[in-house]
Image (cartoon, rainbow, N blue to C red; front, top):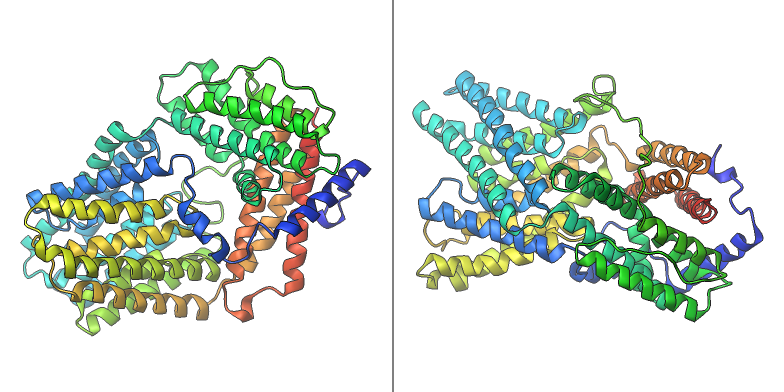
Length: 606
């Protein structure tokens, strides 16, 4: 049944609560801004110290500095790739970092074999090199869009394309072989450094989960204490939109450590699951017209803060009773807190997920073929430009074409905007270092000290909100490519200048290709996303147990968040592809109703 015709408001109490909730949000201004980079929230996104952000920033910085020290000491070719890849791949916990490091070594061993085959078939024949290069580009684009490799396919294709496009600059086949060996050495070093540093500085998945749980409990307490605090409400709603998938992923990784007993893992799963209900009920209790007495809210806020302190100390809270109250939302909040601290062997519902390496429609859906064709065309135009102009410094146009290829126009434009901003900032920082700092350096210690400050800035942005994290990545890329071009102090401003020009050229190529040749609007993805919201909401309402309602309700909110993000992407597309205002309003209303239905299902869960 369509969401627009679903009878959501089934009780007078819930109707009055919802109306008061809407009035409060309207008075404070809408928390969701329908632009990819909301200027009102930019300062908040840059400086919000979310749990684990500083730890991840310092870990990534340490790994990058060690890679620069190793590369500069032994003068390893392509040293600039070491910190760039580590910055891109660094994650919050040591288990994920170790897995990624191992995958890097194994995966890029295969990629180097592919490069070797390309060299073997095409060396000393430029047109054959170009043809094989484009064939490999098409294959990697297809794998990126239709297989489980995802971003790894993009990285592999990027290095295959870049290596083969410069193959004719190597005068002998012996040098080409050595270049391949050095490439493999670089990727092996990346994997080894990521594994070694993460084992020393990165927390365990269980510690990461504890910090996230503590953050959610603290946000709920802040909202109960000050319902008029717009920033607290915004943070709570953002956490609700994240659902439970990131937290359950931490539980899964904790099980992979093989050090925690099964009862503890069950407790962690319960805490991750019911933290979602805690946030939803805190939001409802703070908006109700029959609001709980301030004393009752303060009592629950104090309890939430005590539990948050326990979670921060890598322990699970124990709770036998909760404060009494007559407010339905607080009563449900108390039940969620008791479940948060309880033990349960009941398994989570199992969702039907496609199995296999490729997505189910990989070879039947023409969208995958069209995407691969457009991506390959951008690579061809990029190679044609920088090789035709005989200007090797602007090779970043090829890199931009690879990383800027995404299924819809909105995603492409949003990512290109972030790349433009990040590359400009990073190149200006690199120019400043070349002009005022590097000419006065006499030791590698001074170089590392300079990179310390720059890398912290890039890592902090990269570890922040997903809407700005890619800009942080580009800041780091521009810095390292500008200042580590040679093993001597960089004194030539041509390098950062060429990086900016190449980025602009790549942005132009990607924009023209993805908006003029078989353009795919983000609006085309909305029907499928809305059907997914419908299906999950139906499962939420039909669920018989509290665990099932919470599980499917959280997944519904995650689907709602993905749909909102696709609407944001649609609004940065060219005007002719944007949805009419009435259609956008209908989608927003439909998603708002779905969110209210989830709240109602959780409020009355038995």
